[in-house]
Structures are given as C-alpha cells and as structure tokens.
Length: 105
Image (cartoon, rainbow, N blue to C red; front, side, top):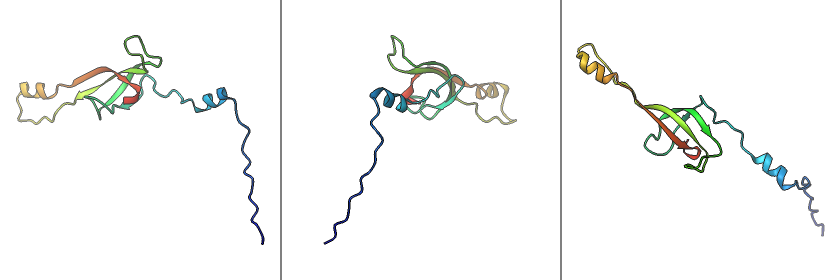
C-alpha cells in the first residue's frame, strides 16, 4: 500500500502581540469636511458634513463621535403661479447640527 504524504504548511513565525495590534488598527478617515451618510436615528439616510471630530470622546460622550451638519428638509418645487409668500415658505431649508457616534455614520 502506498500512503499519500501529508504536506507541511509553512506558517510565518508568530508576531508579538503589540505588532499584531498595530497591523489591525484602522486608518483615520473621518476628518472635517468629509461627507458621510447617517445610518441611525432621526436623520437616518441623510447626508451630512463632518465639522469637528472627537476620536477619544469627551466626559459627556465617552465614545468616538463627531459634530455633523446637514440638510434636514430640502427646498420644495416652486412654480410661476405661486404667490411670493408661498414661494418664500417653500424655499426654506431646514438644517440640522448634531453629535453622532462613529458607529452610526
């Protein structure tokens, strides 16, 4: 009988824990001016711009978060027949400014 020889798989030598942690660290890509989509909460699905980042958190919010600003309600369509008062009302843009957890953007 001929037995099939098992090949040995060569693995790289184990790395110290510190080096492995650095390798897995995610790059910082949430910067001021970056456009993001909010995934959770009242403004879910809305686009926003990052104004300020808090990577290490703060006393009130002990997690990574950022201050974002966006458009909550865009202007509506306007036609010639509408009165000036109605046009002024429909042209109104409702903005939002809020702190958002990094997990929710």
